[in-house]
Figure (tube, one colour):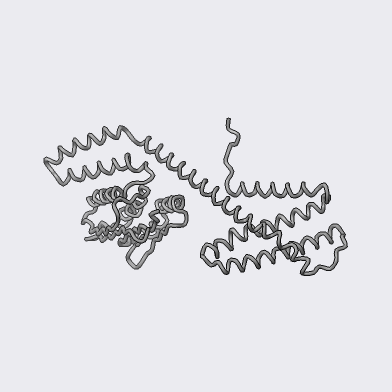
Length: 339
């Protein structure tokens, strides 16, 4: 039996938590302090709690602590907690005087500083709150990746029409053609390898880098036959072939070269590709001439947008993706971690 029709998102979950905190504080105070005083105390204190928690996890922690500026982080957190405590105390006292008509002695700094220690506990809880948000965010991203993977596998299954029958047929055609035209037979073999990659390798979470490169090279060889004057492709490679990466991460750039970066009227199209393993990262770079009729299409296409979304789900913020235009050249660069 399904209890929930949909799962709570990160924002909805936080709203639910804060509503629960408001109600808990209010109803715990109501029997002793009455309605109005309980409302004032609940609103002032919950607001200060939210300021401390989100100030830490959204501002101080990412801007200072994660950048290893520990001294500045500690100093600013102390100042922040003191100011928040003073403002909370001042707001509480003024609201009590205005709405409850209480006679309260003149406000002194020492009195306001008494509100600071409570903020220290909330600061500690903010660290726990941040860990909880990170956990649920990671869990949500993992579920999205699994959902996309399942959908991709389903689409792949739908598109397969007896693939092994097709492979066997291509092999038979290859042997027939090889006797007459060996160069054409090699192209048929490359096509067979590409289709086998889609069926056997692309559904996997990771594939050997050598397999991914072989797929790219087969694709480029087939694309070259459609170019009237050919293309000069320089592919620099320096990596461990046993490295494993998610499939189809590099293909978008190569596909864009042949879709948008080839001038069929040019005598020679120059293409430079490099795939380098360096300091725990994999660096992939493509350079090709800009075609004036397709200005902007490289950066605005669905392929780059989909690739960016997939990279965010796989690596969070640990990747680098850049597309630059330098005079007559398009330069695409991708950097991904290997661990």
